[in-house]
Each structure stands twice: as structure tokens, then as C-alpha cells.
Figure 1: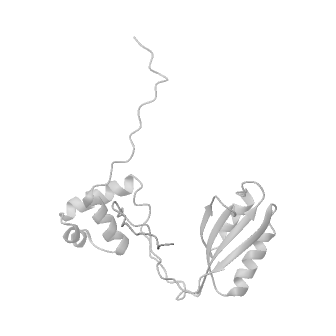
Figure 2: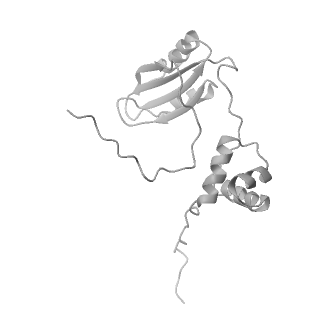
Figure 3: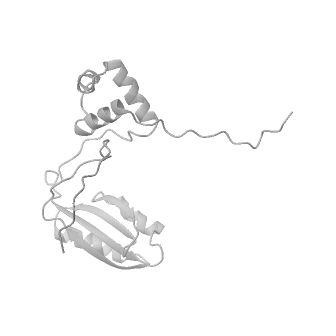
Length: 175
């Protein structure tokens, strides 16, 4: 008999998303408070079929959370800024990651380019941003920051389920 103790089983990736899955995800991204009956009407499936698909999408990790999206101004945080952090080495240190403990920090990304890390923050006012920057600058290895304050937001949406398959052919302007 052959010893197969060390042979790892092939891992299957998540099942590919079909058109119904993508329609369900798009409907949930637009309004996650819908009933399965309302979702079924929107996507053309029965409520039990939608329920089973949503359960599968949650189990597989495609749907990570069901959350309420809050309005920054309504909760007293009208100032949105993107902070580029320049740090020594790769930049992602355990201490820098502690900046995520502040509820004003909405996103934290390790990036390629001039910055090591980019933060998206929502603040009460410029003084609050100044205090946050002081916290960042006090960390060892941080060489500097560049902050970009959003004056207007034209699009702020969650991840979308749709995928563009035919990009429009947009010619560049003539020389």
C-alpha cells in the first residue's frame, strides 16, 4: 500500500460567481436591508434560492459583512483626508498598525510608490487631523507624511460585484 500521509489534498478555490450571484451582490451592495423575497424579485429567483445563495456567498467569504454605511458629516466627521506615510524600510511596523485603533482611520493600505502606507481618515476638523498626524510622526521610522484633504466627494461606494469586460475604446487626444 502506498504511503499518502504527506500528500496534500487539492484545495478548490471559491466557486466562480455566476450572473445570479453578481445580481444578488449588486442588489445587496445597493441595499443590504432587503428581504429575500424582494431580492428574489429583483434577480429573478425564488426567495429560498436567494437565501441559499446568500448563505453560500457568506460561507465562502465573498460577503464579508452586512453593515450600515454612515454619513461622515451626520456623525460629526465632515473632513475626509488621505494621508500618505513615508517610513523607513517597508514601513509596516507593529506600532504603525496601532494607528488603526483610532475610529477616524477608515482604511489603511500598504502601497508601492513614494509612500509606504496610505490611510483614509474622517475627522471632526483640521485640528483633529493635526493631532492624528502628530501621533503618526511620533512613531519610530516615520520620515514624513503628505495629506490630501477631499474638498468634494463625487463617488463613494463599496466594492461592486459587476466586472467590466469590454472597456470602451477611448482614443487619446491628438498631439
